[in-house]
Image 1 (tube, one colour):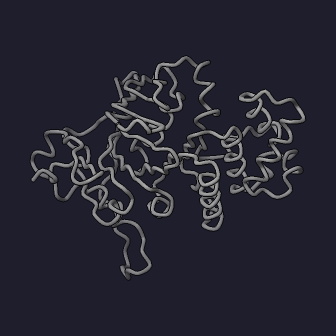
Image 2 (cartoon, helix red, strand yellow):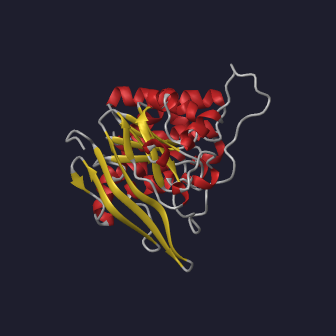
Image 3 (cartoon, one colour):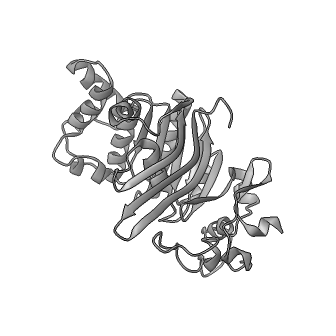
Length: 323
């Protein structure tokens, strides 16, 4: 990996030890993130996207979770830092927007209280400065009546407004990396477009690197430079966004793209990949996608393929690519 990467993940494994045994949620995940880059991580629910982001943030509960491998931020290993050491990085350097703002915001505290607390943890500002900074951040993310919103509670705001508050909280300390976990889920298309425009503006103004976790390929096409496709806890394909959409190599990626609605195609029934993501407690032998793949070979059901280069900056984990 290049020296100028702001984040480098190598051989990341996240396992949960339960009464039913060890459950591998993320297996041998390696990727990098460059300064000012937006990297998309896509896949169905249960593919390991969110667990990967929580592992980076040091938010996996231990026990039952165990995270191994290497996570380097600006060249410094952070995977084994103490909780106190991670607090200096989390929020200050790497911030996260969680999937559901209603459950991420405390319903019994005002927006102002929560914003001020988040800023005070990572700065030396005094009370008046904290309030001014909080109002400034609300205005930055396009919230009208910012001074009044400071005194309101989460339930008084719409989903889009709550998500803007979460972005304001995440960006309050000008982090170098913003991890956005499904930031537009459950928002209508108009609000979704506004949130994506806001993230683009923050990236442009502050050169923030964004790790965008989503299942929406339309959002990926609009926002990302590079894309990682995950399935059952592993990376199955990685390439720049244009290559992923125009020359996908893995059958799972092809299935995801084929199942995306398109106005130009007059098909009555939308394509869907047969079957479901396998349970992490009962993973199939060989390639985890083989039971759902209509091109699977005998080898696919016996051995897990490696993630190999199939072109410049393009990797795929499939036995078909070796034929």
